[in-house]
Length: 190
Image (tube, rainbow, N blue to C red; front, side):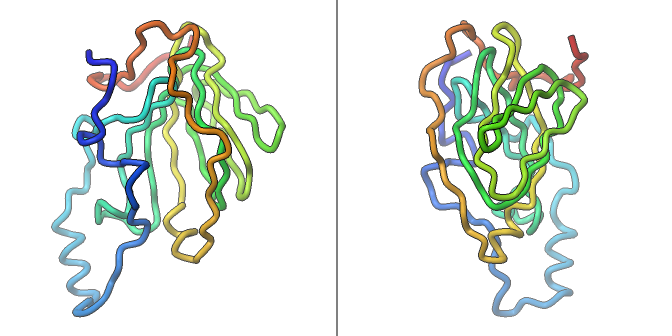
């Protein structure tokens, strides 16, 4: 598998402007909007969504307002390579990380919070935080659910990166690649 994921195959490009809340204007009417929503798929297939970023922190965005299916939810999968970490950042909105597999920890405003598969890690409003995979040999994954679009709609626009994502692999991840082609997403805890 090619070590680098091409940006053009991934629907979320952090270097481009994003649509956080779609405009409803002109001929908008509830009848028209309901017809539009009912014409959209109700199931988002993970295999149709590309994974991006890397090499330590990967993300697959399932639902965002730019897709036209929701206005208030942003749902994505995070995968951390062995020994990997995310960028250090902060934002106004809360986020819930349901840990699918692996074990790791968060640093929230300087305090450490450990997590493992089957648990939920909560990032509170206005918290400077970073996500870490505690294992040097196994990846970790979390499903992230947040109402970021709603916060942005309410003009609560604070989001800041304090430390960029690592551009180099972690010392222990070897040739790790995110589990992009996998069909069985139910993993036991070790």
